[in-house]
Image (cartoon, rainbow, N blue to C red; front, side, top):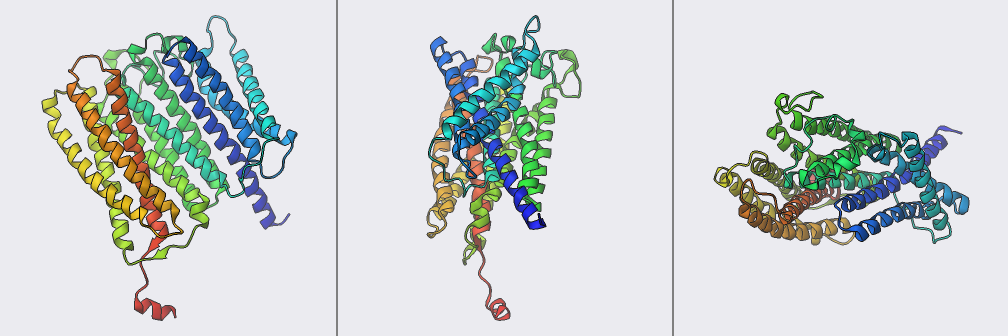
Length: 466
């Protein structure tokens, strides 16, 4: 096998691995979301139904993997694709199974075997069904790019769970780190985690576990970007993302303890609101980096049209960057306001100037988002990605303004020291999550503006080129 054949074989293998990882991670993330909802105890029948759907998700993952196998069909291949998805899911769910182990009886080996056995069976059954289903048009799919997109979605889930923690003022519900009430974080009993939802322990600990999920996928994505894409720039970006995730985890822990310690004695701990603010901001910047990696790894980026010379390329890039920078500033001010109001319980009179700055920046962001959105919608034929981004900006900014008004009214109505109403948590968390989506779309707008437009060559340059 010559060098070119070896390279092509390696890329084929990496694409197959990326496919299993992307579908496995995606199915597992959806399973976690459903389990999170079920743990909120919506009612016996509803909870049981949600857990039943969770089982079907893994089967659907195996089915999708089999249908996406473009290298061959057949029951054996479909079964293999489903088993791969089941194994990926089981590896991630090891983060959860420790909380189910009964310290007084059930063997950890029993849970380990049961987890992998059930996951392999469910994935395999889905794969077997998928082998007789119509094949998906997956030859045009860059699975490394899909994996990056799935990792972006998982990071978004982490941000949502973090927003819920802040909304319920539960950031210090678990006083120690990296342990949880003296337990190894992965072995903290589920029974204690959900015993009293009003304590906030469930929300805080679930956020920690979601953060570990992001940590695992960032390691995998970094490896896949170096192996499966081969572009130095993308490999470096994957490494930067991994380092940011590590830093994010450390910041989250120090935000609780204030120092590196295993104690859970409140007298020896010094929780840091400042680190909480930095932790929240870095999480959204991390989401933007994941989205940027997903764009760069997509086939549309790699095989799309060449940059189009236009006279307005410079101004287009300027307003795209202006929106992105304004959103980051808005994010910082919003994080400061939310943490001062929840962590330190500042009186409204002490945070009015911060709130006014947040509202002023919201007006600026709205104007810039509308300008960028209209520009994206008016792009010429052959650049549908820009029109989709433009439409996304317009929809999200309108939704964000509505959520912002709702969140403001609920927060101002809330009396300091009183329990946080669930409606307030829902609206403020949706406002934060939608802001994160706006940041993602702004990152994509900036990236694709640079990718698809360029300044026209001057006459002097044209003569030299000729």
